[in-house]
Image (cartoon, rainbow, N blue to C red; front, side, top):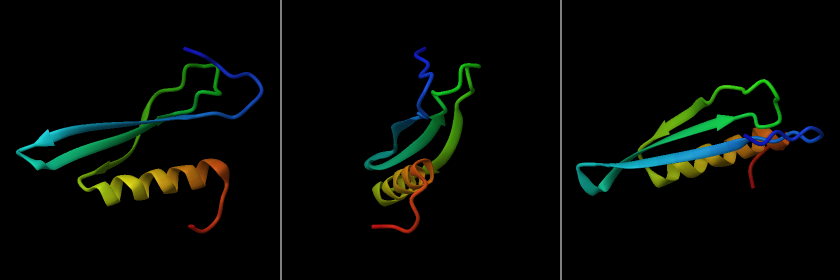
Length: 72
């Protein structure tokens, strides 16, 4: 595991799997704070079943991480 000593950093993992037909899927979005040196645990941010929900979650996560307010 790489630890960044001076900058705040985090990783967002998107895991996608099929359920039934090719159009049906589930996604789990998980995050870990990579700037912590104590080996922080992975945490689930959201579970989604549409591309729009995945993108909305990514936008929200990035906004929270960067401290941005509002949406573009």
